[in-house]
Length: 509
View: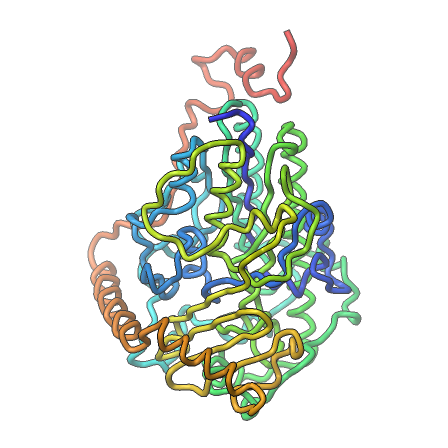
């Protein structure tokens, strides 16, 4: 492995729609650090998640595979330890790998290729959040989204999310300095934050960045009777069809979301600054993205769990050695991150390992380097709560097609109708395009088979979870190992040696 191999730092937000960032043109939201990366790097303008829900999206992102290939159906689906991830492959290429923050791994393997994980996770690692497709209309109140996040939005000195992200940022920065002190091998660090995910609660200093009266309201709000069938189920599931929220509550929620987006952006800035202080910025590719977006009241919907633009699109910005200052209009998705990272790692001449499983993504490095992007496609699948059948999305060229067996299909011209207000499936002028998409869905997916597998795994997991509530519990929640006897200065150490070892930059002889 050549020492010139670039480091990789991937910074992930949770539930960040690119439409609500300054880097993607929002007139109010302040994201100066992401803006700065985009100003010297590549911004992908049609990047999508492959599943608009936390855990499935992250499993797909880590593995480069669509969720139906690895049964990553919902937030309580187990991520199999036998599925190779970009962390596994980068280790094979000589990289040190570390995760700081959320990845929502479910199952006893809480590393999935990372050599080190320096924080715990923030959500359950067991089967607690398993949906029930046999009772799709019944709410599971303990963990289903509801409108409380909107009604209770506002200001607080701290929350569990702020506590968590402060820890994630601290340990990520310390790890960068550790890598710098150790030198030699390249590294891949993933720093994964939970903001701006709801609850929409922000600290005062971030709230005060914005004029409350200037916060823009949702552009298009549809009543339940104006919604498509799937959106009606979403409204029912999050109680938006029965719990009214006032304009002021909506404005509060959006204000807090903008504030928390700026808070996340500040963490991006801290990590970039740490790379500069550690002397690593010139040889580190920085990637900023998210697991999915947030409707934030658009169309009368909240949170995610659908394939409309605000839910399904994600930011994707890359900057660093070999990355051009460019914007890429072609559709891409999070499964493309794995092959892109492997190409980044191989850019200094290292040989890429043989893939343990085929990946569904394509490398975006050529496009990020200013070359032509030959691909223009994103595939999405949703198999979690608030539905009883799989939902599929194909985004290609200007069109997006959405299919669910029990619903009317939808097709939108994203270029001409970015708000997705006109379903073109019944439009005679678009008959051939819609027909081709419908035939592709039928050829690509066996919806009945997928549904049967979802039901089977749900039953398995509910049985295991019920049993685990009885007797002694062996939790899968990750506890980062720490040996305090080896930290800082201890009795068996020469404090001057410890001081010199940890100082960076080191004193010159």
